[in-house]
Image (cartoon, rainbow, N blue to C red; front, side):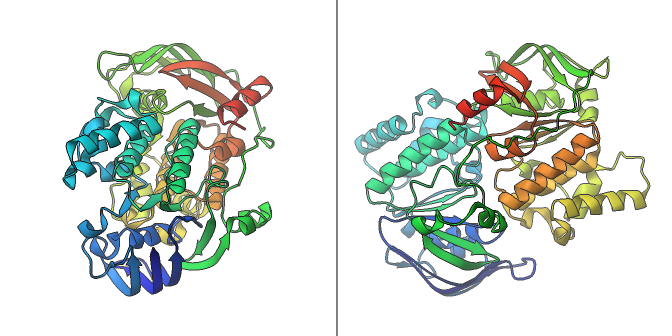
Length: 490
């Protein structure tokens, strides 16, 4: 079904020898394979070779043979592979062709000229399996990141491909959607599909995958059965840079220093159209806390972050900080937002310049700025990339650059929207440690996240959202620990 023999690939203009080397891999029909490893190790590159994007889209030096469904990908066009291989990318927006959910779901079927009755049948089947009815008839631009991910999965599934390649499919999904996706993957597996999943979050895949391929520095270091993978001790997994196979919340971060000062929101609301997307009559957040903002996809978490940071000028109500009511301009000066799609906030020619840009309004001397930047880059293991163009980095590396810019900005309120999507265990710990260091400096931080491991590492306060409203808040202790365990189905 899938066969890679003596394959080497290095991207054009890549730093050093970024790519994959000496790859020998065979995946038979019907097998579910997990590709895992540290951020930037080569997982995405392997997936691109399987779905034909390498060499047909990404340029570089390729040697060896790649055979997929009988096609030699070096001699075949992408359109020849399309009926057989479906792909779900890490950033779902990069694979959308329309502007509306219904038309996006059926786009691939229409594109290959499928009969209308067959399209309707497949549409209804996929909508039912993925529970997409609430998203029908909506603009793709109005969806949350997780909702876009679900539509991307649906648009691929309608073709019923023999092979499915998924790159970080859970990165923006809430826990309920993750397990819905797991159920769909199981159905695809039962139907005989071959599925390759590049993923950092492991806990939801342990009863699905048949085989684990561990990639390190572009080489396949281990290729083992899931049974053998489950016997690897947790401390060894951590050294390999891999996330936990379970979620427990048994070791919650507890360094809580309670202050009297609060950030107070009063009648804080916003509507993209007529219906309110955010409606907060009253909310107090302790200054200096690390706040986990959780809720299902579409609950209003990202909207809350954007309004807090002054990016939505038409936000109603007030936000009070240090005894002063902040208008949207003052909120921009006070807050820094790490966006869910970090590609929107990377502007310069190098990682170093990116951090310096976030410090341009600082009164510090140039020498002091450089020392601070060096410290931040080292803390996030980015020092070797300081002269690299940010857009040439992997998704996880870009994520860390954006977090580094937030730390360099030295603003009083930091908001991170899914800061660990695409990050391995080691880099997730780096981000958690950086957040705790900011807490020690008195910063108030909001972490909008679906990542239970990050919450366990560094959060001490909880804001639980549902349909644009605040359902529950409080320090992460007592009954709220039970609440968060129930939310993440622990």
